[in-house]
Each structure stands twice: as structure tokens, then as C-alpha cells.
Length: 77
Image (cartoon, rainbow, N blue to C red):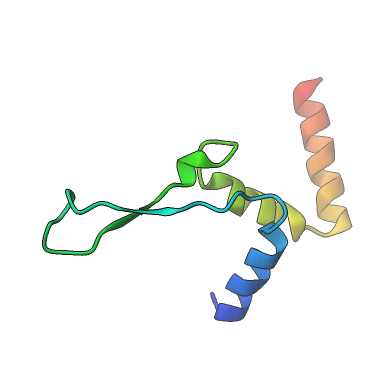
């Protein structure tokens, strides 16, 4: 289950790899609501996906990392 503690933990882990991204006010989307867009497209990868991927990799055990390494080596050879 997602908890605030897990969110803070992930934010701490990602702090050194992720660019801070701004919120841009977008009243054109719905003039009756305060709509903001998060500019995740400004990440180095061009998307938010680096957040989830990096965090998942950072939580792998040594055994899991070795399995991933073996799979990648098999795939690229």
C-alpha cells in the first residue's frame, strides 16, 4: 500500500537523479478550474518513467540486480 512515508523515501532516493520540474498553469484546458501541468517532458529521458524505473532499480536486492545484469548481458550478446 502506498503511504506518505514511501513517497518521501522515493523522493529522497530520486533527489540526485531527477530534475525538478515546474507546474505550468493551463487555464485554456478548463477556464472554470485551476489546471496545472507538470513538465515531466523536461526530464533527461523526456518522460516521467525515469522516476519509477530508477526507484525500482534502487530497491533491488543484490540477487535481483545480478539476475537483471545476466538478462541484459544475454539480451545484448
